[in-house]
Amino acid sequence: MIAYTGHLNIFRRRSEKRIRLVVMLLLYFSFLCNGQTTDTTIIIRNDTVISLIKPGNLEIEKVPEGKKLEEILRDYSEKNFFSRKLHEWLVKSSLDSINTTSQNENNLQFSGKRIAHIDIRNIPPLGGSVNDTTIVSDSWQVKIGNKLRFETVPQIVLKTLTFEAGQSLSEADIADSERLLRSLSFINDAKIVVWPYAGNNDSVNISVYIQDRYPHAVSIGLKNQQPSVSLINKNLFGRGISLSHTIVTPTTDNRDWGFRETFETENFLGEYINFELDYSHIKNLQVISGNLEKNFVLPEIKYAGGITVNRSYVNPRLNDYPSIEWEPPLDYRRQNYWLGRSFLFGEYNHPLRSNFYITTRFLDLKLFDQAENHEFLPDGKFYFGGLSFSKRGYYKNNLIYSFGRTEDVPYGFLTSFNYGYQQDDGSTRHYLNFHHSMGKALIPSKGYVYLSADIGSFFRAGSPEQGHLKLVGEYITPLIKVRNSELRNFFEIQYVNGLKRFPGEYLFLDEDVNGLHRFDYSESIKGTEKIVLKTEQVFFTNIEPLGFKFAAFTFFDTAFLKESSKSLFNNTPYFSFGGGLRIRNDNLVFNTLQIRLAIMPRVPSGEFPLSLRITGETTRDFKDFVPHQPGSPVFY
Image (cartoon, rainbow, N blue to C red; front, side, top):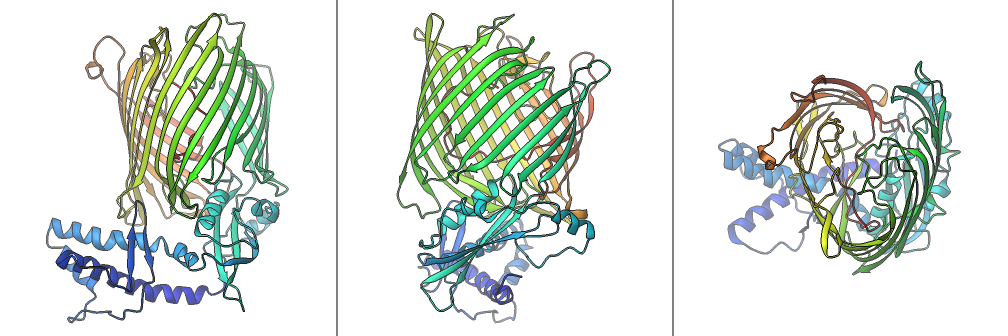
């Protein structure tokens, strides 16, 4: 167990009572007399968190009738709707927000002190937790499983941290380092604890607790009627190197074997550079590609960029048009280069930091042997430049997209303006694009809102073409206790309009990400304008056999697609609704196992309106407020 844990727990329980009373009294008297805050307790509210500084030593525990103030407010809340909402906002939500920042406040008291020593402590992936290091499994299977792997070597962890021994400690460095460690695909969770340095009040020791994901995995899949088997290692020799070997077996209709090899390393040379090589030789996919990229993962990073070289001999898809599958498959070469410079405004040791970005990009796409030349394929050389302003921060939460591991939720905004120039055979085009997005946690504890808007178009001789307008709104509710489960609701509305698109260039109700659950009839259902409304209810259960967690879910999606000259809402809507079960172990590198039943009342002629599917799903991630390479976004 972490040293001092017992003392900290005792202190925390005592402090929580005092914190509740102090918060209630401050809020109550501020409503009555609009007075100043006390000189012993200061509550600072910002966009996402409530930070408590110096809780003080107030000993007020009870009111004259012998009841705690919280109990009186709770009793009074049962009288009417208004009092229930008042109790919910003043008591429940505020206290929840305070409790989530206790670790940050503990680290804050050591800010500015010299770091004397850093030690790395590895928690086994099976049967362990960074939040309670006393958890040890007695299962012999777990013990053997933990031994059949390499722990992440300390050097990999140390080069990811934004601080080192001898430097002064800052609160931002602690939060950023935890977030960067959790972003590595081979690490499940991370926690940094600051300790007093014995004999020197100006120095501190730091313990970095990391829990690896179990690196070995076997995956079985079926695509295009061809079964495949993949052998995966996400942390080879504990060095953060990922290897994947896939064999595609033949069927009665296809006697060709296929294989795919993938090599990947993260935070290469400690510079937050990711490197990936991919080689595929399958009947419908023959490609070799390499990617070297560094993103603005920290506000302090000055330079970022990337190089991608792709040679596809047989490929049914193109990165710039991921929703379209080409017949016959394309043969092309794609080279992409981008570079960005960031300027940080204000102090770096602040939870919400602002940056100004200048980005440039060059894309060279050459298509070979096109049997059916489509006018809207982006063949040629493209030059892009962008200016962006971002203000971003992160706060911790869980049970959103993961099944219990710590999640870093971004908040803030991003505004970008891009200009582009295309040069192809005998003609030129200009490109303009504007993007704005924002995300905010509704305080206190009222969920999370994300909004974004994109509008852009190419211009040829002053006339717009291949334009787009995309508006997105998302809302994630706070957790709701339902007996032994936790319920969270997800709502999304998306509007997309193709402006002056070329003939044959369509929008689709493709499955999940930009369309309806289990709706993938892109060949027969297509249009030029769409609006999609999606809802999902996820029940996180307390069932946890062998570390596998279960979440039941239901969904109801509606979409309007402009398929004719009629206005959007004069077209008959499409629906998809149903439910299923997700099974995941965050300690493993496996995808989430999903069993889903979908009902689609309206489908193309000859298709069945029911779908039962078992799939492996990747974990969804948040949209961050960081610019990437400039250029034309994909058209959904």
